[in-house]
Image 1 (tube, rainbow, N blue to C red):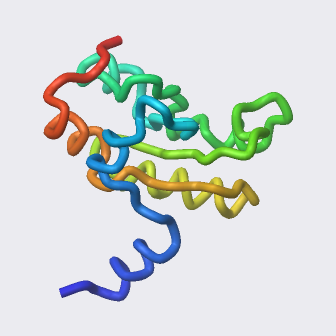
Image 2: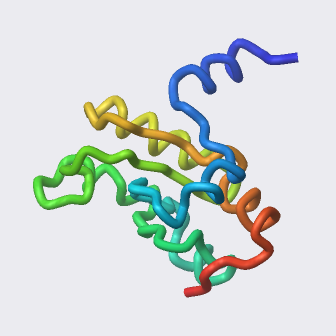
Length: 120
């Protein structure tokens, strides 16, 4: 059963599945933003091409004039399981950043699908 909170969650930020990401990653124009802390990435690896902007520093990037968020996107946020990246994507949307998406299931789902991630 889908709760109202889950329904709102899916309506606010569009979810991208790992299967879809896998099918488009080679020719994708998505900017992938991994909001995990560097230690998490070091331990678990990351999605190829992802840019690390830790969740606790992301507000500075939204408000800076010299930032990756100055382009049109699309922006795909990811974290370990999809919750913190959803919050980061929601914040981005609230700051007026368009073309914002969240990776459903996060890096854990990616790792399960791909079995390998870039390390370090």
